Amino acid sequence: MSSRTVIRGGLVVTASDEIHADVLIEDGRIAALAASGTPAAEAFTAERVIDASGKYVVPGGVDGHTHMEMPFGGTYAADTFETGTRAAAWGGTTTIVDFAIQGVGHSLRAGLDAWHAKAEGNCAIDYAFHMIVSDVNQKTLKEMDLLVEEGVTSFKQFMAYPGVFYSDDGQILRAMQRAADNGGLIMMHAENGIAIDVLVEQALARGETDPRYHGEVRKALLEAEATHRAIKLAQVAGAPLYVVHVSATEAVAELTRARDEGLNVFGETCPQYLFLSTDNLAEPDFEGAKYVCSTPLRPREHQAALWRGLRTNDLQVVSTDHCPFCFSGQKELGRGDFSKIPNGMPGVENRMDLLHQAVVDGHITRRRWIEIACATPARMFGLYPKKGTVAPGADADVVVYDPHAEQVISAETHHMNVDYSAYEGRRITGRVETVLSRGVPVVTEREYTGRKGHGVYTPRATCQYLN
Image 1 (cartoon, one colour):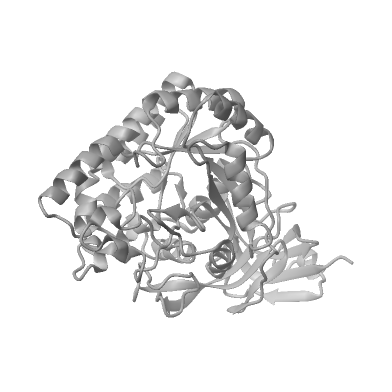
Image 2: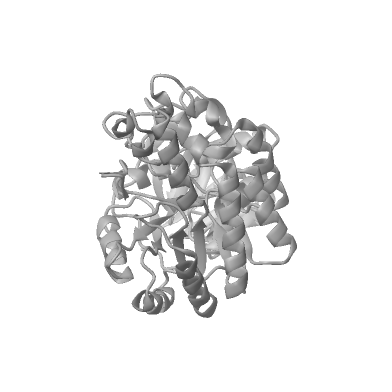
C-alpha cells in the first residue's frame, strides 16, 4: 500500500530557491511540488495533510561530523546511536555521518564492522560513516580502495593526539596519494599535536591546570600551521582536502588562499566556534571544562572571520563535532589537570536552531542556512540529491520549521544524553515543529513519534564537488 502526505501552505526553502509551495510525498520520497493555491497543488490528495501556513518547509539537516559512543580519554561519549539520533531528529537533523575508528594494529574493516554493530537497529534517522585512519600501512591503503567502492568515501586523519590517532606527514601523504587515486576525500584534524604536547607539559609544570589553559596551549598559530601543511601535502598528492572544525582567523586565511589558487580544499566550522569563546573556557569553579573541545574555543574576535568565511564560501559546511561528555563523572576526570578533560561538546540538537538564529541576526541568508546545514554537507559526502534538498525524487526528509516561535535552550529540555547544555539559557527565535524521515513522522507538532531502528545505513558516493 502506498502512503501519501501533503505539506500545504509553507515557504519551501532550499539552498537555491524560496517558493510558497505544497509538497506531495509518496512512499517515502518527494513526488511533486506545486505553487500553493494553484490547480496543480489543489489536485494533491493524501491520507495525511500537514498545515505549514506561516512556517518554513526545509530539508532535514545533514550533520557530517558526529561521534556517538566514541571512546576517548578512558571514557565514552555519552550519547548512544539511539539517544544521539533521537536528539538530532528533535533538532531537525535527519542524517548524520559518524566516524568509525580504526584501532592501531587493527584493520579498517574491523573498525567499520564495530561501528555498524553499534548503530544497526538503533538509529531514529538515517546514518552513514566516515573512517578514521589511525594506522597507515600497505594493508590499510588497499582497504581504503575497498571502502570507497562500498560507500565509505571519506577518511579522517589527525595531526593531533600523538599516541592515539596521530599520523605523521609521511603517513598523511601516503593516504592522500591513495585518495587521489580512488576518489576518496581526506578529512583533517589540523593542529600541530607534537608542539601542543610540549606546551601542555610546560603549562602543567607551571601549575596552570584550569580548563582555560586548554585554549591557551592549543594555539591558533598551531592550527594555522597544520592547516597550511595539510594543504601543501594534499597539493603534492593531487588530492582533495576537507579541514574539520576550523576555529581560528589564521586557519581560515590558509583555506582562503588555497581556494584562491584553485585547489580542491574545503573547510567546516561548528556552532561552538560561532557562538562561544574563551570566555566560556574561563568560567570559574571548573565550569569551563564543559567547553573543552579540540580545536578549542577562541577569543571572540575570531568569530567575525568565521562568519565572513561562511558568507564568502571559503567555509562551506557547519557540522557539530557532537561528542558529549557529562560534566559529572566525565569532564571531572580533568580536575587539577586540564589535559585529562575529555575533549568534546554536545550540539547535534542545537545546530539547525542556532543557524536559524544567525539568519535572524543577519549573519547569513535563509538559503545559505540551508546550504551550509543541508545541501553542501550532502554534496560534500556523496548523499545529494537523495538528502539535502526538497525536490522530486529526494528522500522525504522534511522539516516544518516555525521561524517565529521563541525558545530557551536548556539541559532541562534538551534530548541529548548529557547533563549540561553548552548554550544554557540562550534565547533564540525559531523552532522545529514537525520532522519527517523518509516520509515517516519522527517529530509531530513537538511530540516524538519516531522509533529506534527506523534509521537505515546509507552508502555514499564520492564528493560531488570533484566531478
